[in-house]
Image 1: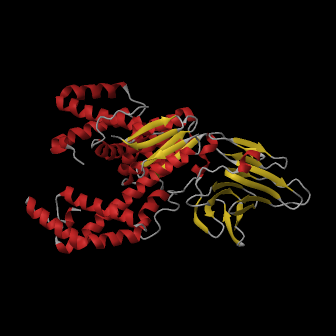
Image 2 (image 1 turned 45 degrees about the horizontal axis):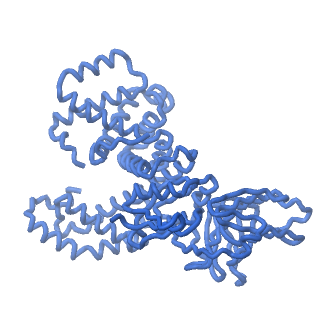
Image 3 (image 1 turned 135 degrees about the vertical axis):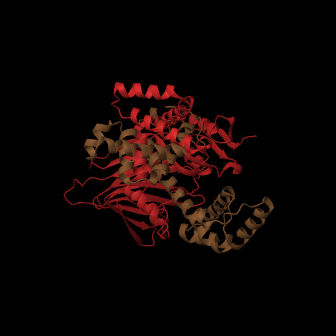
Length: 331
Length: 185
């Protein structure tokens, strides 16, 4: 912290006076005689003037953050719980729940069934439906789902992509379980709102589940292994095992409002996620793969997102064709 | 942290020599200490580097018998800074994500605002909670001093006193480095 001007006690005294005036002017109820006294103080000494300029600049900086956002963020960052957690990590408690930096491979092999599915969305689309029994479905980009209700089960078959399910009690006299079937296993609703996302064949074929209300029961493949997930939890599974048990990520639902929320993601992961919402190929040069991206991005225009990346990071966006985009290091 | 330092004014080569010893003797231990607390070897390695950078910037090399407490003190501060950054960043993204889409700022604006909020948060962190709350009510909720006084059940003079404490803390961190960056609204 270099405050060159606060070098002498005299300077520091004037600085405190200037800050006192700033505090007076912030009151929201300044009296005329106070204003006059302030003007007199300013006129009295060029040093006062100089100190005031620094304090005034500081005052402008304090106002620069949007007020409602700043109030929310600072209260969260300074809440007793947040402060307490910061102190407690040094006593050996776990640092972060969740972590949030999941790396995954998103392949690009459309399932043939995709095109015949009961419900589907194209790249960059999202849609919502209410089924006759009151169950609400929201499909994210590039997703496909079949609905197969019979006497024994309300079966939703997630063929590709990502679905948010909000269940309602079965209207049939005999209540049937609602089960989401995926390539890796099943997710049974226990009165609930939950998100199921299928990561297709690739580096890591798996299904991730976030539970926001109620609970679900996961079953991995045909292994018969089960795991109960309660509200506020997330986990993933494949045909063999469960993993990644952590606090549910509310940002995973941002797509519902047309937003992509990145919290310290690697650029490579960010682009892989962005690619879901675009047609064509989006390549990431390994040289820039580890740059960190944070931010909230409107999904409406993914070209604009790429453009803004080029402004925020030392990267260059090159287009071989509109459908072949490469993100690489700036020359 | 000065009480942990030797306090000697060192010549450049002397300093380099002592730094070398400090690095060789304690780097592995510090890494291990951090790794056990963070549960991640990479983060620990980053923070070890940061800790030594702080030592270099401070220009003071601790006496050998004070080396570990001194490094541990620095490392604790770094861990807290890092965790605060995560908390504030997360809260900021949550807040942004609640905004209607057209109000979402550009990534550069987001980065500048986040830096500003981090500094304010770090500055206010060391103050008593009642001082912090008064400062937030005035600066970010836009309440007048008499309304704050009424709400908090304190005198207006006390509100002013708290506001000065908050302003001094924020001024100290803001004056340094953020410079003349004018933030877009």
